[in-house]
Structures are given as C-alpha cells and as structure tokens.
Length: 119
Length: 119
DNA sequence: CTTTCATTTGAACAATTGTTCATGTGTTCG
DNA sequence: CGAACACATGAACAATTGTTCAAATGAAAG
Image 1 (cartoon, chains in turn purple, cyan, red, orange):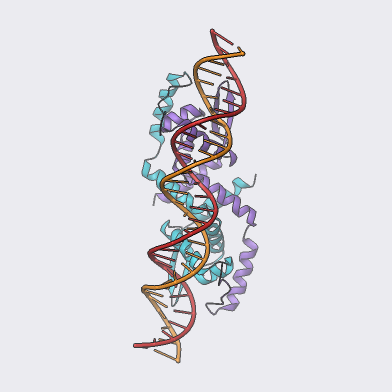
Image 2: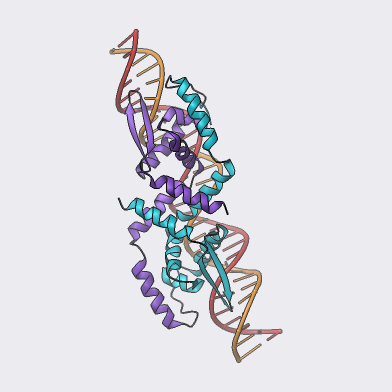
C-alpha cells in the first residue's frame, strides 16, 4: 500500500461527510472477512453443483460423487468446506454419511445470484 | 477425474430417481460458470468494502482509494472487475470517473450473506 | 502544445485454491 | 479378529487471483 493519502477531486467538504458515513456503516474487519469467506464458498462450480443436488434431496458422499462424476475425495474435500461455512450439515447412517442443506439462506443466495446473471 | 463410476450404497432404485431429478434441475454448465464467477467477485474483502462505500454514495476512484486507504491502481483493477460483472456502473465527469451500484441485487446478496454469518 | 491530474492497463510476483494421490479413520459383516 | 466398504484427511501440484510497479490513456487548464 502506498500513495493512498493524496488529496484529490478538490471537494474537501464532501470528503469529510462521506468518510464519516463510510466509517459508520462499514462492518468490522472480522465481519468483512467472514462475508468474503462465505461468498468464496459459492465461487466454485463444483460446490454450486453440490448445492444444486442438495436442493433436491439429502444424499451420501458416494451418490454425490456419482451424480457429479467426480472422485469421492474431491467431493469430500468440498463438503468439508461447505460444512465449515455452515451451508450444509451431515448425518451418519451406518457406513454412509448423508449431507443436506443447513438452512434456507443457501437457496435464496443462489436464487439472487441466478436472477443477476439472467439479465 | 477417476473412479467416479463406482456403484455404491446398494440402493439402485433411489439412484435412478435422484439422478433424473438432478439432471433436470441442474442449470446448464454455462450458467454454473457465470454463477460461480459472480460469487467470486463477492469473495474478496477489498471488493466488499468498495460495495459498502457505494451503498452510501456515488464516488470517484480517488475518493474510494482514500476511503479504503489503498492505491488507486488496486482500486481501479477491482472496479473494472466489478463492472465486468455488472455490479457497478461508471460515469465520467471531467477528469474524474464516478462509480455507483448497478442494481439492487448487490444490496440483497450482501444482506443475505450478512444474515448468514450473524448466527 | 505541454503540463498536470484522474484513471486505466499490462506485466510480474506472491499467495491462495481445487484436484489428485496415498493413506488414515470409522463402521459393518463374516 | 480381519476384510470390505464409505468417507476423511494431508501433502503436493498446477492454476487462479490480488496487489504492486511502471507506463499509457483521457480530459482540462495554462
């Protein structure tokens, strides 16, 4: 980071006002990091495809791997990530582990994204 | 990709059903890529901070750089990315270029994300 | 036209990320 | 117990990404 202290645009009064409002409204650094972290999770087609499968049903890792034609390992890694972000939850049933959506935010966030790209 | 053709879980009937529904509901590859691309844009604190400033007002690059204490170059690169994703729009006024939100999807997507992390 | 200011752009670099491969854990069944 | 199955995990690798630096536009003023 450098030269970010330049005065510019010659409107010092409006600056003060804006900078105040920004500092008030800007969430704390920790929230910004969490927020970015959350959206990063949605920023990968593999994980989005996993979520679309989970929109339909609760499924085990092995079914997910088959449905998406990927290795179980790759799917498992992504599921672990999705779980850390609390987007999915898991439940063991014998040898299998079943995954499902953790809450409805997932659906609405994806839906909003879909609306945006369909323009 | 390998060994993704394994039969598993011994419930072949449910498989058929699930696989059918998944294939029906799953958006085309191109949409999945666009969707991931969109969320990647939200997956970075710099860009989220830029958007939070734009929630407050229409601002020029130089003001953004000052508000966020970053170089104009870094901010400009990110603004270009935000513009390519149609999340912000720009308007030239003399020497300055003013940026603002392109539509209200931005606000609601960020809002949904905020709701999710505050749990 | 030249200078200056505001912004953009390209190349380069370090840092992050997704997949693969190999191995480890946990569960069931014989 | 030991074998087989479903899944998780760690290390390694290629690919992608964000910032910086340097140089290039674009617009206004002298």
